Length: 382
Image 1 (cartoon, helix red, strand yellow):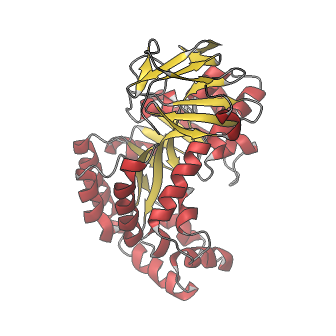
Image 2 (cartoon, rainbow, N blue to C red; image 1 turned 135 degrees about the vertical axis):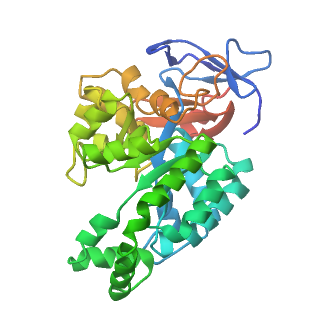
C-alpha cells in the first residue's frame, strides 16, 4: 500500500480502445506519461494491463452481514471482507448496493446506520473506492428523513429507486417465499404478513416520497437510476424524476426506450457468465452486443464482473476492448466519474493486471498504490 511510483512493463495494455504492447507508469496516484526515477517495476509479460473495474451495483456484501437468515455479524467485519473480495476481483471502484427497506433485519434502518458508520471508519485504510448506492424501497416512509440527511451530507453517491412491495405482495400465497422474506427480516411468517399489509396501506404516500428523494439527489448532484422497470410507463416515470440510468429492465422494449433517450442500461454480469438470467428474464449478452446494454454490474457475485468481458469475447461478436468498456469506462461515465475507466495520463491510477487464462487478477493498483498481489504476482516484482 506504499505510495511510490510504479512501472508496469512488458504487458498488453488497453489504450484508446485497443490492446497493444505498452508499459504503464503510475505516479502520485495517477497514470503518468513516463515513469519517474526510482519507480518500482512489476513484470506484466503475458498479462493484460487494464483499467480497474467500476461496479455500479454489487450487494454481495450482504452475505458478510448475514451469511445465514437471522445470523448477523458486525458491519466492520463485513466491510473488511468486502474490500478484500473486491480487490481479488479487480474491482477498484464499488458502489455497494445497500437496500434501505421497510423490512427489519438485514435491510433495516438500523443496519443501514451501522453500515454507514462502518464505512466512514474504514475508508481511510481501504484501497478500493467504496461508494454507496442507496437502494431506497418506495414504501420505506419511516426512513425517509435518514435518507435525505445522508444524501445531503455526502454519504450517498448513487440513488436507486426500488419498489419491491408489489412483487412481494404477489408472493404471499407461497409459503416458501413468505418463509424466505420472514427469515431475512427475523420475523415469523404471521408477523411478516402483518407488516407488509401495514406497509401496503400507505402506498398513496409513495409519489411524494420519491419526489423528495429525487429533489435531494438532484441538489447533491447525484446520479439516479431506476430498478426493474417493467414497462415504458415505469421508465418514463423515473426519467421524469431525473433517473438517467435504467437498471435491470424487465423487457427489451424498456431497454430500447432507454437507449433511444441516450440513457445507460445496466444488467448483471452473472447473467452473462451463466449464459442467462437466474430469474428467467432477458439474456444480457446478446443485448450488450446490440448496444442495448451498456453497463454490466456484479449484482450478487463480485467475481462475475471480471469474468463477464471474457465470456463476451468467447461469444465471438465483441472484442475485449469493447467488452471491457462494459465494466470500466461505461459505468464510470454513467456515474459521472470522469477521472477513471481508462489508462490515460492524468487519470486515477486504477489498474488491474489480468491473467486471461483464468481470468484472474494477478495484481491490482488503486489510485497508484499496489493493493492486491497474488503469489504469482509477487514473483513478478523487481
